[in-house]
Image (cartoon, rainbow, N blue to C red; front, side):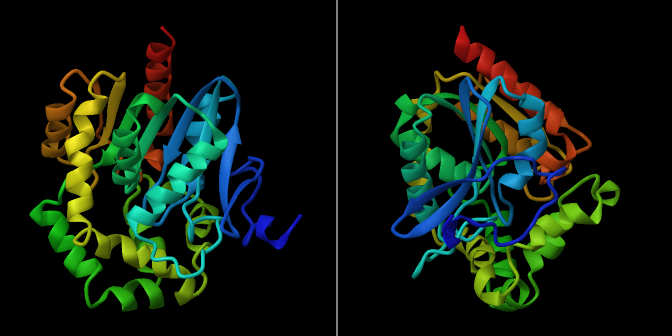
Length: 294
């Protein structure tokens, strides 16, 4: 086993009992989970998370589907490519290449946070790859004024200090984004801070909030393509206590594109709803998988 195929930190097996898989591209190894068999389900994370976020959902789905969950370059167990910018556009290129490598087509796409723009950018360019969609507290269009304000505050002049020096996203935002944070053992939070031990390795957590303001053309291009996915089976699962997305306006915006999509509103879930209500998300995935199988 080469150095590129070793974990940079340890996670208790009881929490994350999955075999490591690696996709190498241009000399850099990206880590992912490939668990089970059957209908492929691709799960995309946001900031500053990784495939660990989906561990309980994968467990609820069991062996009856093929659960595929990558760690973006610079996140989770994945390596940091040289001269990498950590932009959502670059992440989308990596995930597109990884999808071609694991060959799961057609697949059900599950997206949360930045996983939405990244996943939808790929999906709208290759709708033939998509069997269905499960959309979790995310967006895929040019930003609102609230998002722009957040980007200026968290990804502006204070960003290098907050993220690179204080590991703000992993250490503070993750805890604040879980409804049941007080019930979580310390090992959970450690799994979210351990990928970012040094300022150099935290760059991805800083670029994401800054990028909210810097990828408007890319988001516009993605939004234009959403209509190509209108006929796919899909569901929305929405955490209503999410400070970022937990408003009815976001749900209605998605329903403007996909008016027939069922919506599950979770009153006791926050931004990282995969931690708060994994069974509800797994149930939605199972329903979409059943529709795909008809």
